[in-house]
Image (cartoon, rainbow, N blue to C red; front, top):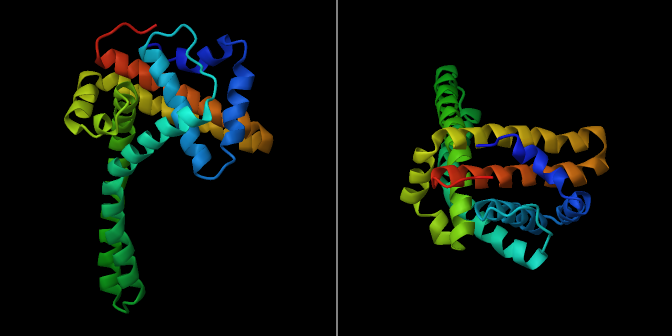
Length: 216
């Protein structure tokens, strides 16, 4: 897996700025914009799986929104355990707020911490599984493909190290994306889509490793 390529391939495209700034502007649209840019990043994934020589795509709102919506639905399903684990925390917090017993408050606090730890652990697992689910969704052009849990687990099992590298790359990309808001609010219009482009490339590379195909 060529980890560094995910961070450099963008700038090999002579039109990289235009291809980043348009998704950056679209991201200003609440919810719909983020879903469309997710779909655009997954076009990068698709291009990598097809060995495209120039994987950074032009933004196509309709196409990317449709692809992003499918991925969004998949992410909602995978996120159900987060909600299930968070619900007891809400209930326990409400009980603690109305309880005058210090012992009860302490026990409730411990219980909330345990559920919080489970949420953290599942979030890490989700960070490994979701890229594989997203990639199956776009490659097969089907929500069902992303929800075929056995196939998704199989991809991750066959290429655990690459998918762990995707998780590391996702953290790095998220940090890069945040730099735009720290340095200059306008800069986020470039750094955020750049972060999405990084993640899309990593998803494609990991999938190719899992399928035992040659990545470029």
